[in-house]
Image (cartoon, rainbow, N blue to C red; front, side, top):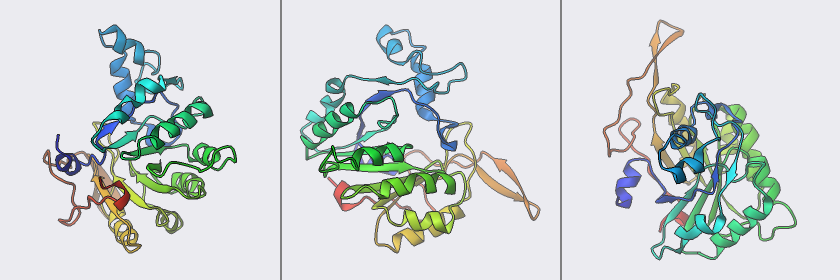
Length: 278
């Protein structure tokens, strides 16, 4: 798939690096985790190799059960040997408490050894990420081609995750407001504006929780006033519609034609920071 095709679908990365399988739900955004659903399906595969990779990591309802399986690093980072520069993404949480510091250190060395690529790491455990990179044991804190990010769904998770991320010195910091579940407060917005890049998205899937598009309008405007880029990944599958003055019904009618970008007031935001344009 061509890069422009991926971007128009809200896919700002070229390939994933699957370092960790499994997780422990720790935030409201975890309720309908797509990775847990994929893991649950993988555990039912007839192929023994695939089944062994995923089985035992989810409960009967298809949610992560807290068990983590760290994959062999040398096998996982083989993709970094690709000669064409790419943006790689690490999704399942590299900073889960059961992932050892030494594994993270070796991963950083692998990323640093391939400076033509860009690697995006996203965590819901920014406090662990911050503790690792702010430790005197690790200097410099991160390779220049590594982008450190955290996700948040509402004001509470933004106030929990953003300060530790912002405390890491000398790194590229990005945030993912996805799935957006509540409007952000001014206090949270002031933290968001300190990021180098912002990704925004509603929740997708059959159980998607709703969001208002106007949660995004002011956020996009205020963030762009800082001169930094915004990537509107998706609006989500569900939206609130008014019924009377103060009551709302949830309807799962929001759709987007395949291959087209999400828009707000007819405008799309598919912006990448200079350091991620390769």
